[in-house]
Each structure stands twice: as structure tokens, then as C-alpha cells.
Amino acid sequence: MNYLKYLVEEIHTTVVATVDDTGLPVTAAINMMDWDEGGLYFLTAKGKGFYDRLKKRGTLALTGMKGTDTMHCAAISIRGKVRELGGELLPRLFEKNPYMNETYPDAASRSALTVFVIYEGSGEWFDLSKKPIERASFTFGGAEEVQEGYFVTDACIGCKLCYSKCPQKCIDISGKPVIIQQQNCLHCGNCYEICPARAIVKRG
Image (cartoon, rainbow, N blue to C red; front, side, top):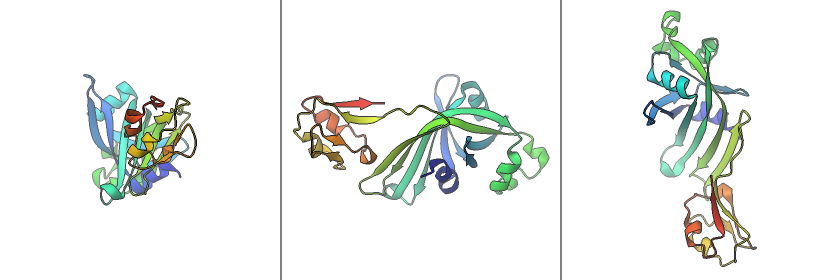
């Protein structure tokens, strides 16, 4: 699945977090307007605090969700590095997002705008509408993939207590060590807490 394409075309509006000068997070609703092999593209006005935070930190995190309610919802979260591209891509973004013409109707008003790209990042797909739930990790732009979640080591004694506490029953107990099926795991930590052999480790 192309997660960047889904984020732009199916979700579009995301909540983006940046960090201010005091180290506190600040959120803003930002539309992801295009994607390609270079990353995710969005724009902002150079007079905004959001622009200043992007320039100072060069990073952001975002989440976008699509669905009718909590249990029928898919979400994509991304954290990554950004850089400013300037105004060269503005015509492309306005063509693909014509609603922007209502806010910035002419060239004079668009002079304040600049385009950013999220050129390197890691992300997660999380779908509560599937039974069991579905999750997947991904990277783009050469970002290093980091394993996150709970994993069973060779210290496993095969007691299966972890399975009894797993709300998704996503632990394969047919062998030893047992195997947590990462694509269905909630990362709740129940297995980690109950394991008498301390055979489950948390990564990420």
C-alpha cells in the first residue's frame, strides 16, 4: 500500500505537531497537498509561527484519520525531517488543490506562501476497522527503520500466559518461543506485564 498517496488523497487534513522555543509542542491542522518519490508536500505562509518553528527545528510529527467513528477508522502517523522549497511548486499544489484559490485568489496574495517537503521520515498505519486490528510501519526518503513494540526472546518458557491477556489474541503459541504477530498488536503491554520469565522486551 502506498501510505503517502493514501494520506494525501484519502485523508488530506492532518494534525501536525512542531516544537516552540520553550520546548513545548504546538499543533496545527495542515493539509498534505501532494506526494511523489521526493516525499510529502504542504504549504504555509511565511508570516506564521508554524513557519518559524519548521525553519528552526526542521522536523515535525503528524497524524491523519479517516472513518465514521473510532471503531471504523484508519490512521496514519508520520514523523520526519522537512525543508523549505520556496514558491516554485505553488502552481502544482494549487492545481491539485483548487480550493486554495478561495483563500489566496491571486498572485499578490500568494506571495506570502512557501512550500515545504517532508523528505525523510518513518510512519505507522493503524486500522481499527479490521478484526484483528491492522498495523504496519514504513519509512521513506532513506530513513532508518526502527523496530517498535513487544518481542519475545528465547527466555520464553511456553506458559502461554501472554496469550491469555492479549486483547487481540495475536500471539502464536504453537511453538516456543511464542511469536507476537506485529501486524495485529495493539502495543498495550499486557503480555510484557504478565510474563513470569521476563521473556518479552519492549523496543522503540
